[in-house]
Length: 227
Image 1 (cartoon, rainbow, N blue to C red):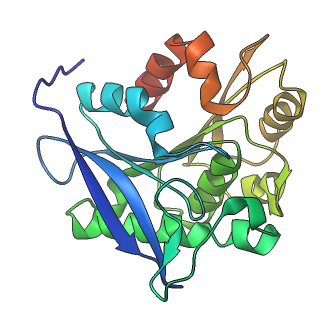
Image 2 (image 1 turned 45 degrees about the vertical axis):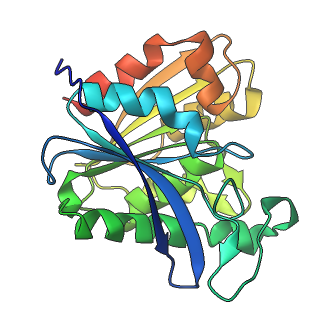
């Protein structure tokens, strides 16, 4: 493990193609083009829910970018003055969050990170979005999904999993006391030809809440990314 003592967190902003102002926390590494993990929170969480994990990623030699998805946290304004609140979103507005992910990727590329060095992870609906991103970018090597659903607001993971290549890798994790997500990861583990790892706990709750009950999960994901 690489231990860094000069960790820096930078608040960043960028605009999506439909004019939403997205705010993120960027945890920089020692050089621009190193492996970088894009982190997508669950609902109704915010980018800070990834704070401890992002710091562990940097200690392990990665960079990390955690964003507030549209309508959450600090990402509640549009360039034309509109205000957004995820509580008032329909399925279309949730699905449009993939535009936040795409522009986060572009921000990282402008920062000097090559597309092949961008990994992605998400929790709950953020996991579904992460899988969509992986399916739409075959050059991306890997994604980890915490408590995905087969269908969150029309983002259907079973269809997305079928699109992955045999070279792409997915880490799936959920807890059995979160029955829908546990059933989802078990189903996704059987779909498609991508390389998969399944970590299923008896208990632990939903999404990034599993980090509190199973802190070792953070190290397992990092070790998996390092393979």
